[in-house]
Length: 337
Image (cartoon, rainbow, N blue to C red; front, side, top):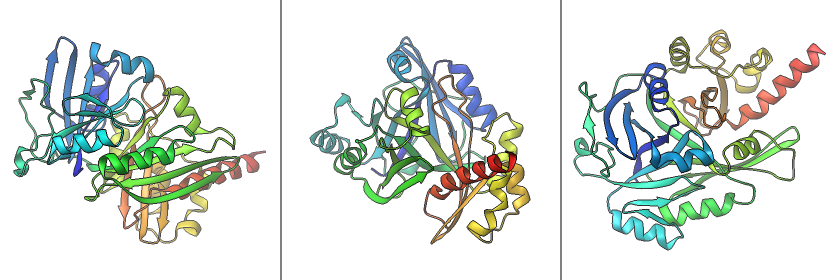
């Protein structure tokens, strides 16, 4: 698999979901499709494509999981060969170029053309009508590309899921980490394509420990799913301020987190005051550091949310922030007692 062609987002209220991506996050409508069994809108920003779909074709998915990513589509150069490989590894064929993935999330294969201008990312199973103000190859905005997807799976299925993506889609194990947060714990393995453009951070809860946010998502989502797409930006402080003015609600960070930030992470190009003002988190690994922040979920089931991430050399995914946030909350609790 070369790249993620698009994410398809099943929506209960088509208009409000499109509005969230366009008005709040600055995506541009590229095309639309109206059919008796579904309505779809293709949105673009930078190299990210999101298709919002609603209608009878989405009812089964929405009833089980609520609003969220229902299809992670891959570009590939040889669809028949890719389909055969995935089916041999245990994937189920759901359509001419669509396969089963984790949980009820599917993977549609999109032909990669040698002519990059021809790679529209439009699935060819619907009659698309281009928007009047059709965007160029990279729509202006804060979001540059899709950095990774956080995929949550039930306890005991992590390694089987990883092996499936290795065998079916030729993703390779990139890193792994076991994270303990107080009485909770989670295990994770990152898988990535050879191009580096498809990255899944696959996470399962440790069922021997206290239940936590991973268990909560799996319960509300009725099984495995995409907890959050992470959008890569070049200026996260500016992006958060811009998106916040447009109505995006981000998670708050305890003030105690910033009191220990320099000691934990070291020198940053950004000021602590700017990070505190925007609630942005920082984490460091052996290659550098990253900055990240998560939105609140705008959906009724409180499942899917979004991440902004800026990388200054770091190749990790901010696992140190999970523990740092927990400890800062505890410091504030003790000091306020």
